[in-house]
Image 1 (cartoon, protein in one colour):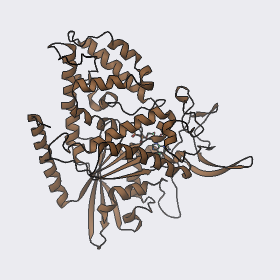
Image 2 (cartoon, protein in one colour; image 1 turned 90 degrees about the vertical axis):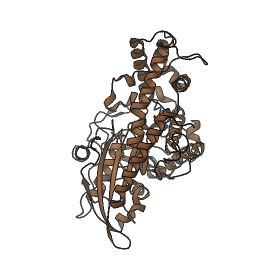
Image 3 (cartoon, helix red, strand yellow; image 1 turned 60 degrees about the vertical axis):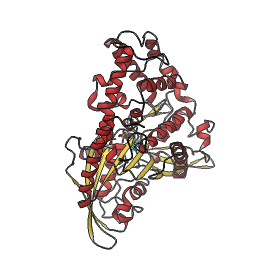
Image 4 (cartoon, protein in one colour; image 1 turned 135 degrees about the horizontal axis):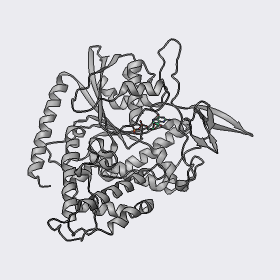
Length: 489
Ligand code: GDP
């Protein structure tokens, strides 16, 4: 790809930044860990549980440096980047533990610095600084826009909006689109209406009944501090295939704003945040996608392929060879595994592994170690076997959040109930074909109200003997081992 002047300036900035970071981390070993995932995937809960566990003595038998007692202490330090909000750990942990409510979800980027004092295997004492960067996955899915023109993006978005369940959700926006002429005069009111209807369509797609994942531009759904700015006031248009945008036309206006979106939103995010990460965990709410059905699952697969593409950006696609993304380990994690019986955890991992492998194959990705895990950062359920007639059914016990309903019953937030989540199919393909009825939930039930898992309240802290009480989890320690275990050798 030919480099433009702005690409060269961008590269110079990236290189300068990389050199600064390198100098810092030479004297002060640092890992920048990115935590991402689409809205409600479980980022806030994951980070809160991880910090609580590391600073307050969590139970992490599979996290080797911790289990063998080589980690002396982990403590929070002031957040290093002045322009980025601090992850609101103290508030989140209070909500989770004292109020037993789930904390407010991620809507913007935030950061937190954890410093870990540990003993090396050769017994010298060392310190590792772990900078945790929490950012919406919607923003990550914007990176591929950097290599797309307005016309390409517009054509692709329109084609997608005519497929499957999206078509019905796009009707109001399409009706408005039919009244517009791309080559007609530019018109602020038309642009505002188109952007509003397009955003409403995107929002409807990610409603939990449809659980669609592939919805750029990400800031339309997660505007951060940019809500209402002109860089967010554009939408796809129907355009003649070989034409060019006449001066002063609606088309030219939309195209200019799309370009501005890339310049003021996407590029700075890539340079200031994404390009500086060393490790990445991508959280995936696969269970919601299963619940919504095969369309949602295929959409999730496409979104993961999009995310995977981002990790190979820079390898000849976006910038020249001068700059390479630093990320050398990526963990894909299916969250909220506590909503399934443990006999299905391996199957959940298998579905995610299949999805990620397909995405990785398409992206021809080689350059970072990739792993997959099914986890619950905070385990809200216990397991039990409940007798039903002569059958012994594996079930999970938890306290549904107040107001949750099932089978006509509304829960008060205090009563513990047993549910039978059912098994995931042994063969992941069944879920993608949609013929494996799962969890007693009809795969075709996307339009009906009662289709999802019960939302349980967070658990009470567990206490064992005189130890500090800890938050229960599933496989959080395995995630830690993969993400930072090697940096604590
Ligand atoms: P974010 O948008 O990625 O920051 O998502 P959150 O971390 O706020 O999680 C969204 C919701 O998912 C929470 O409010 C909880 O209801 C649920 N959740 C997240 N993690 C877990 C978990 O480990 N177990 C259970 N049972 N629910 C979880």
